[in-house]
Image 1 (spheres, rainbow over the protein chains, first blue to last red):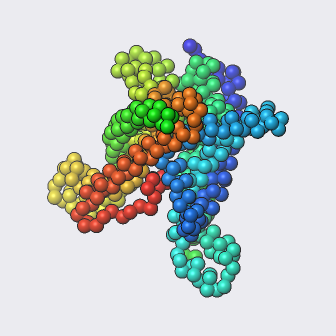
Image 2 (image 1 turned 30 degrees about the vertical axis):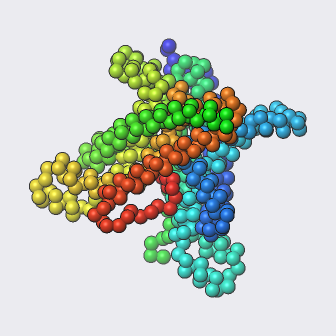
Image 3 (image 1 turned 180 degrees about the vertical axis):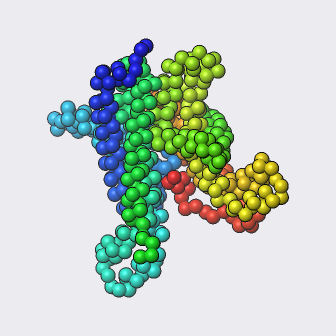
Length: 235
Length: 239
């Protein structure tokens, strides 16, 4: 029963936890990037109200945001496991598939979730851009690609930034959910540690602490960028 | 068709558990959150600091970690193991889930309510003081009614997040909608169909809750004579 921080250190768990944290951050960053790509495309579709596509985006965001994340992860994981194993074995990549598969499907699931939230943030930011700016650019005869690059994108980024920060915070916390399907990220490492040493209290406390450090550090970074992006007073 | 006959009754059984978990944790969490929001505005720096750090810790860590810490971790502490009332809570999955969800939503609720309390115009509070209202009366008659009206739209979103949060209870042996859905998925291999039925249950539940919140909002705002502004999406806005 005598098991403390010393044993965590001697058991080599510190390295395992750090590796887990690295996987968590990798999954979080990758999903956030894909989520932002999805969000920008879907946000633009919603903003322009493209008939047909816009309704599909509505369905996507409503389903993802109304259904628990865990259920979505189960769908993507159990729904694809057979299919992917078959394909990979057919091409002789069975072992490779095992290693990369969990990571891939995890990023796909978390991206789909963070993409739905990003869509709403980006749509809101696009709607907040004054119409007159775009009309002025059109009146000046700027080509639409330049209108997007010079007028729409910079304002969209600035307005959407606080919302994107929120999406990031939820995304990094959502990555913990994929531990239930077996990816060796921070939560899974803590789970294994808790199981094999019979000391869940220490391992989950460490996990909580590491998550807290990740969220707080990224919060500081986001706040810095936000002040950089905000218009200077008097300028 | 056979599948629907098999899955729907099972998932409806889970719906009952989901509803119970949501109702209990929202009821407990709202009161805790209100307390924290009041502490946050306190002049005592220990009290307001406690409320602030509580909110940082519970909003900065995943709900799953909190649930596991309570379910697996707390039983290890001798004091909790030896106190019957505490052991009663942590020895069983659904009670742990309610505890974790309530503590979690309390942190978010405190932020939402604090936003509402801060938005109460100072002049109204001063007027209430000038009328000689006691602190309690002032809070009950002036600050809280105004704050809750301000906070209601955001609080509706938090309730939807709680409904989704109850799905994590399935990881600690509680069989609610997601728990049953997972079991059905592995029994029938009809992954997508089970997902669709469970998903519809969640969507309908969330829509009903949002509808109720709108009705409450309209009732509270009836003095303004106009319907509350319609928010764009049916589901919650990003936090």
